[in-house]
Image 1 (spheres, rainbow, N blue to C red):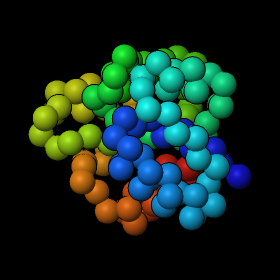
Image 2: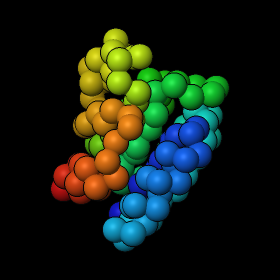
Image 3: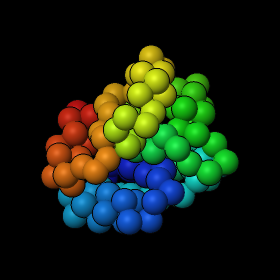
Image 4: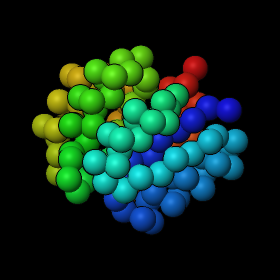
Length: 119
């Protein structure tokens, strides 16, 4: 079973993502801030990371930096509100993220992109 780490501080979004991915049979792990995210990357050893950009304690960019150092081949999908962080999203792609999904998003589209990232 593939392990997916979800790093998202918005409870509604994180619950929606977790529900949809569990329904597809993934082993999901949810954390709600950047510090917990960095710890979880090292302890869970996920097959895929889904992270928000703007979060408490550490940003999504810091999480991506950490993930790419410790697990360079793990795909990362970034969730972000469209427009507010255009430069940050560009930086995320430069760091090697696999995909970007603007909020709000369709849970079915997320499921398709997760499946593609894990192939």
